[in-house]
Image (cartoon, rainbow, N blue to C red; front, side):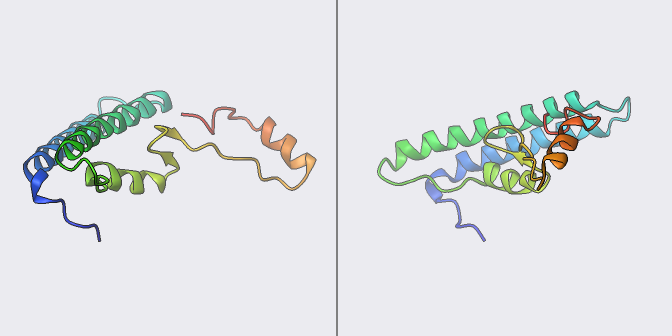
Length: 126
């Protein structure tokens, strides 16, 4: 449970939420359009663009908060915090705006070499 958004930014926060819902709805429509399947690069770009737009909405809220409450830290904005939590489940680093790098945790030299020689050399990148 998150603390409620202060009333001082209620209208601005509401506009940011409406913008976020519209953005995500548009991106979902793109994914569901069925015209063609997006490849990995196109899917990653769509996700990057979505995360950047959500981060921009949160940055606007942070600026408004700093103007209204200069000595208080900004609360976690749902337009940022919720996607960050959800995307972390699939290995997406919301702040770096990319897939989290998977480290080779092989216990031996041979496992490390096998990791490097696997067929999909871009598996850890998006």
